[in-house]
Length: 243
Image 1 (cartoon, helix red, strand yellow):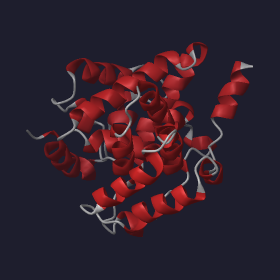
Image 2 (cartoon, rainbow, N blue to C red):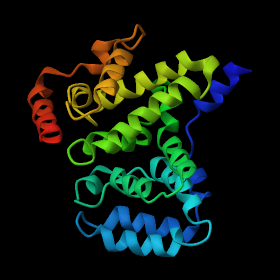
Image 3 (tube, rainbow, N blue to C red):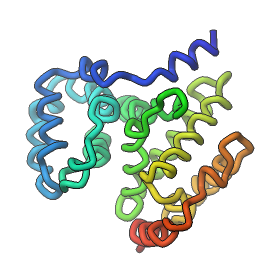
């Protein structure tokens, strides 16, 4: 039974399925935000969306569904990513900070990390579904490190408690997710997290120990970087970890 649960969990969530959990109007407006609104211009659109959909009875409870949709229901093409529009990770960061109830925050973080818990690239795991969580953690290091700390702490909580009897399998899936994020170039190196002094020391130690644990995904594979990416990694680490 438990093996079957992991197999079911490992089946990626189709984008159309996550779209069913939000209204067509919400989907249309979210897509407009992420496809057309440039960085720096997003606040008024976010406020408009919040007033219409979140600041209404039961509206805040939809945030986990919206996060799930953003992760799995919309995977932007490179030309959109490079066009200067607001990124998916930034929209999710805004949604997380819009939650006023602890249980909604917890559900939203679960929606963000759910694909990490069963990630297996060999079985069709899509890096675009796990990308927002990683980019939100990395891009929050400079000015909003509390968000990075909160997300990492929650991820470790999930690994330990989501399914205790399958804890090692889930841990392996999370290590695989970290490794693929580096391999696909989402981040040049995990040193952005493991070497950043702004991160809570205990979380840094826990992350290093987790990534170095004996597993098929070795610490070298998870944390290593191609030699031609070393300068890029160092520069990005300097930018996000600078005082």
